[in-house]
Image 1: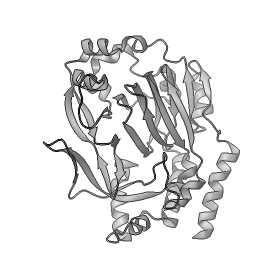
Image 2 (image 1 turned 60 degrees about the horizontal axis):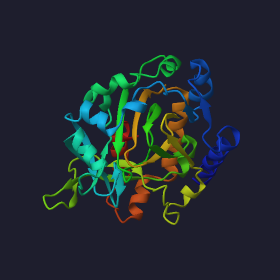
Image 3 (image 1 turned 60 degrees about the vertical axis):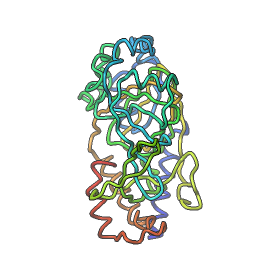
Image 4 (image 1 turned 90 degrees about the horizontal axis):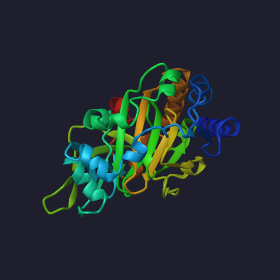
Length: 340
């Protein structure tokens, strides 16, 4: 086991030495599709692109006044949490937000601090919420990014709209998508780790739960009984506990800020953690990844990492010794497609 762990660590370090950047580079303007595929998608490397969405009317139109007039009466899904952490580990639970239906104007009242509500509010429902819940705004952007669609030979699977308070944080995770994340107003701050750093990223297996705000305004955590346990990243990259997760000290996180009018190409399988300025508005395009040899390599590294540092070992270190190896195999397999 130690030999395998050492080789995995060497593998990750070689990736940084051979081809990974120490910071996220910039491109100026919409790239040629073939060049972009060759240099960034195929290479699985992030890049920030400037002046590629400067023609979007949204960059000047999407003020609170415009949005109130355009979609203020629309009822949308909003994630509400006591602390801003949605879909994140809290103690020994993987806790999802309370999903609340609100008018867009009510959300703007909270963002503009015209009203005070307990909790942190974040418009973050995925699965193409821009097209499904706010189609009136689609004329202000593009339904897809033409050069990206040409590079991949397909249209995006989803187009998502994001708006929230500065306390709203996206915990570290990865997606099976080639992601173009476009900031319309404000700023997004990303912590990125490449797939090759998987040996240093600790997972646990957690009971799923959901936040619920009681009538007295306090939040409680309600277990989702009968649901399979969820594998999720245990470490907080903003304040990593290296006594508990010493292997994370060998990771090489890259931080970057994406400002209004810029887009981040976030490659598939890259781990990412996201913060934002207050009232930041963003739109992202999820393009399905190619399940090619790159995906095969990641699956191998992931499997070897689980063998050498299995999540149930972490759980037992938290005095939750009721989970067994056989239970882990069932729960991880059952949840992988949903959460990894």
